[in-house]
Amino acid sequence: MKIPTNYDNQDFPTITPTQFLNLFDHEISTIYMETSNTRKKIIPIFLSSTSDSTLNIYLDFDAWFRSYLSISENNPRVLLFKPTQINLEDSLISLFSWTKPKFDYLIVDSIPSFYKLINNRTEPNRASELLFYYLSSLRNFVCNANAKMILLNLPVYKSLPKSNTKFIGMKVLNHISDTILYIDTIKNKTNIHIFNNDLSVERSVNLEN
Image (cartoon, rainbow, N blue to C red; front, side, top):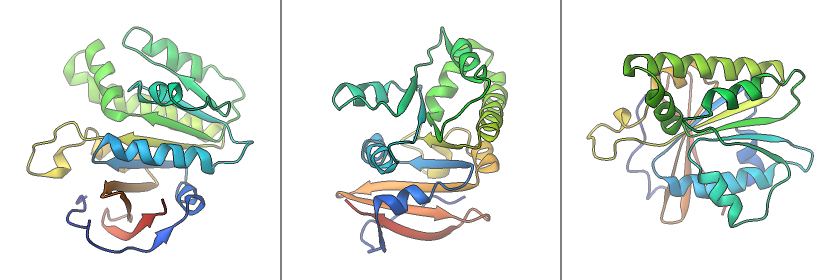
């Protein structure tokens, strides 16, 4: 998988917020983002594009979403889980114990923070294995609910020459995901690159402001 670069000066077709929401029609989607500013842009657009009857589960490993809610109107359509190093397993068990889950989207924010919580609780060589186990369990949970899961992945290493090595768990995420997007925000333009099954960019679009 090659991360797109040097696309900031290109004009791509523009899509609306509703068309952006339609990109997540498949069961599992992964969004790679270069900076947290991109998340700050796309998550409010995503939530506002869902219908009033939509219920979203938000696993907030970064505590970013809690900050977002504190400066915006509380969203009654969001069921917020706040896993920490202390309550990680309890939070997930609480989620999985939902016998007849009925929701539309499960958002995992973000993979690096999820991995860090796991890594702080176990031996380093087991962290990747447990991450795959938890993600597989979340996938099964989403499948049973006939819902969709969106995984947010931000770079851990900002100075590495190869951008492909910046992201944790790329091999696992690319394996379990039906839809893979790379989104960057440059000069107030939000470019969305959509990958095909061969992990090459199939098309690129610009998200309407």
